[in-house]
Length: 166
Image (tube, rainbow, N blue to C red; front, side):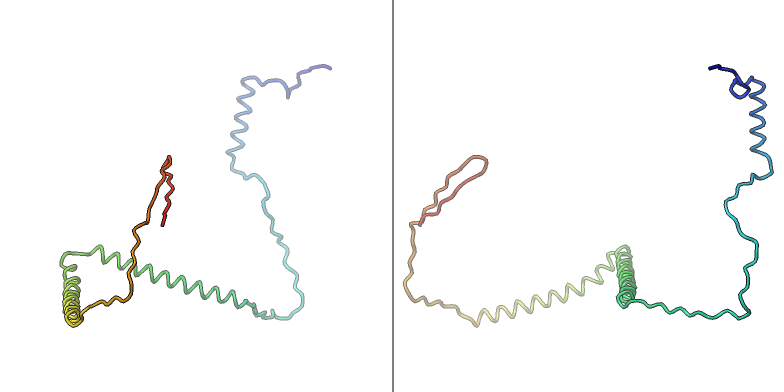
């Protein structure tokens, strides 16, 4: 087998390498486009079939009842969540604008009403307590056994065992 150096397999001299580099760079910057086809549109006209006018084709889609129900429900849920979010936003805006005067104007009437309700409740309770006397009548023997013993046996690591003897 012979190992001959052909023109393609030998290394380029410095002047040849510079000329080849210049040729490649100038080829990249030339103004003419490189022909690479990515799509093709056929320019021939579409053949006509007859002389009749186009026919209207109405759209009759059949939507299942569950799909229509889900669409309506999702719109309702979306509108409801939006309303709740807007209400929450308004409440937060109100909390951001809280001043001592606004707190007093809101809470003082509520506190006054609560004080009146508590006063009326205490009067009603005292009137009921004055009219009721409690007297207990026990009938029958009362037996109390004092012989209950509890023995506990402690074990290690918090474990115990308790016996209840009557």
